Length: 123
Image 1: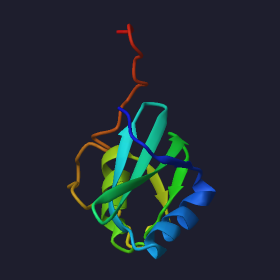
Image 2 (image 1 turned 90 degrees about the horizontal axis):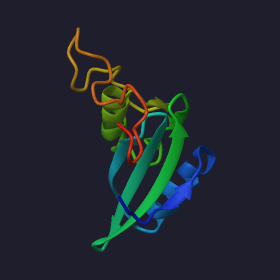
Image 3 (image 1 turned 135 degrees about the horizontal axis):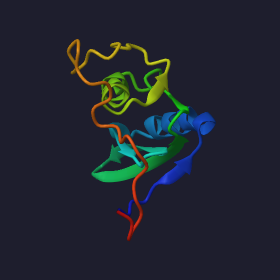
Image 4 (image 1 turned 90 degrees about the vertical axis):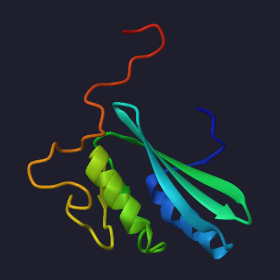
């Protein structure tokens, strides 16, 4: 998949998001790409029908900072990513504790890969 995105690290994520919001962009969504040992979070913003994207790449065990302190509506998609993919997201303004979609007894992180993704030519 090819997507134009500005690479950011965890420490630069909030200032980058705030810059987009201050320029009039709105948060469209956050997309989680589970690559096994790595997680990519793609933050998509819209301004006048033009998309801009930030990309945060993390090791599976790393936590992403929440952006809900600067974009309040982000708490919903952050809870979704946390719940469905098992990604740690720190300081979500309203953390639903794994109960956005899941019911008691459901499989934990049902969309997370249990093993690294095989490369081309591997089975």
